[in-house]
Image 1 (spheres, rainbow, N blue to C red):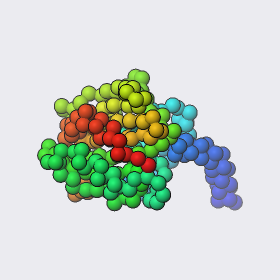
Image 2: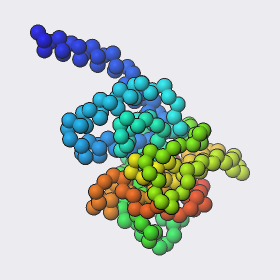
Image 3: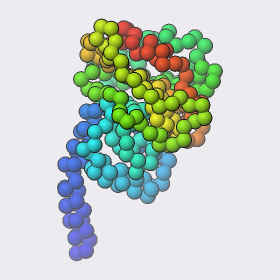
Image 4: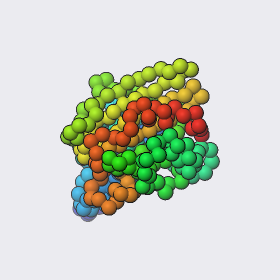
Length: 266
């Protein structure tokens, strides 16, 4: 009888929270792209610790569902501690992968990206994902490994804007790191652009983050990190993400050139 009572109680609680969880998940899907961090976190934790983390995260997501967030970011934990709830400007991914249909293949995106990068930069890993309109690579410019995540999306799915006030760091910023910044620009011809250097997360990882929105309704987003998140050489080293340098490679001017290329399309 006690077991039946407990089962009934859990069923009642599940029914009560299900609509709120559905709303949170739906909002997150509409507003942004997220990384596969929960899966990696689950592999790194014990089963018991993971269950607690998921429960805490779910509770916090329900409580914070009404908070406004920066642009297309989603609310909730990535690889950071589950009790930290703040907008996530990086580690973002497209919400709905599409291996077929419209959109540039990763190989096509690489053929546009590679000629813009300095020839001396060595690409060490290209994500095997077949998701159209998105590519992730690791490379080294001779000063340390770095991650690039590049996505093309409909502007109607993005609502990016610089936060006011700017972000604060979740963890220590590497010595010699670029300062946090965010600038919104309107370009000739009607395009808009957000150029940012994000906060450092708990692992001291941060990125150049640019959103370039064209008058034709497309937005090109790029994140360039001060380390790697996946692939080679990251998998040979412990920890996630792996910070390999004080500053992301290149410059804001270089990454502006990348996102503003007219060759990107859906």
